[in-house]
Image 1 (spheres, rainbow, N blue to C red):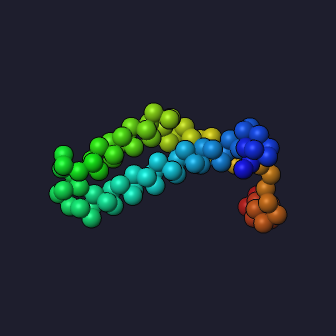
Image 2: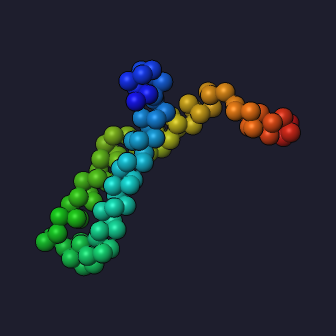
Length: 93
């Protein structure tokens, strides 16, 4: 929605957040399914182990999480402080 309204440059932080969280969540869901199914979840009879390795590969193929997290941090540091953060910062220095 932000990308549609303000462009991809303004949405860069949110895109990076999605690129970190969506694959992590997919891996967690697959891992939970493997836990539920026990030994069958990791056997060749189940598609879960293949799904897990495919999702794990995608996490690296789209760029390592650390690259996306660095983007998030850089964008956060560029944004102005909210009023509460400004008060805390004043007291710290």
